[in-house]
Image 1: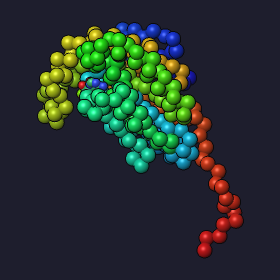
Image 2: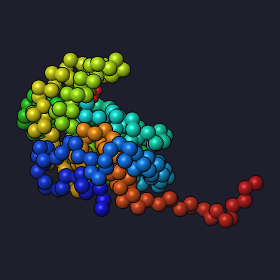
Image 3: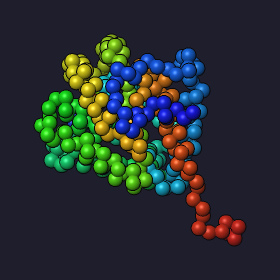
Image 4: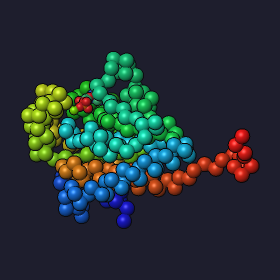
Length: 269
Ligand code: AMP
Ligand code: MG
């Protein structure tokens, strides 16, 4: 069975996050049990990235979304650790700059989309414009309300131009977020990551869950699917994301390009 199927939101399916167990670990007992699988996937991603780069037909866009402390940074650090930096980059989307705010919300996003042969990873994305923006009324409802269709149209343009889009919602529970924030408070090597605003943001948990449900429901398409990843266990999250990336790249049936010359006729002087 393809694992991707298990985690993906089916086209037309209404997402209710309460139905998605954040603690699920499939048939794995524990971290050790999943270690080999993750290692194999990371090695396979390296091979497939090489093919992607050689063939220069497709681009891969990986979108990571999730609540604070859901593990977006950790996913990048672990799952992407075997990729060749030559054709892979990460773009983190923070609060828009004044210049970015003077443009449409997709302006900064489109600019960061990977080119053919490349893998681009978005740490947050255009979805913030229907998440934080919606939860905090940063623009009127009329404006963010139109964005679901705009995002769908945008993603369609990309996929019709050979950008393969995989969107991951790292689904963590409210209890697990508390543990992780507590951890960040205590650990001096993690304290730099947090601001008092992160704790204040927890008060909006249910508004965020609702906004996520709507985004995952309305902006889910066969060509640009959402995957809901059980993310309370970091090791399972890492395995699941790597597994889906491998399956998607293998599904492209990529081939090395044929040389435009006859190698047998060439003599190296
Ligand atoms: P972090 O990912 O923890 O570095 O935080 C980035 C912050 O930027 C988060 O609080 C996001 O909600 C915020 N952010 C990202 N995109 C937008 C946006 N389009 N509008 C407002 N805030 C945003
Ligand atoms: Mg943060």
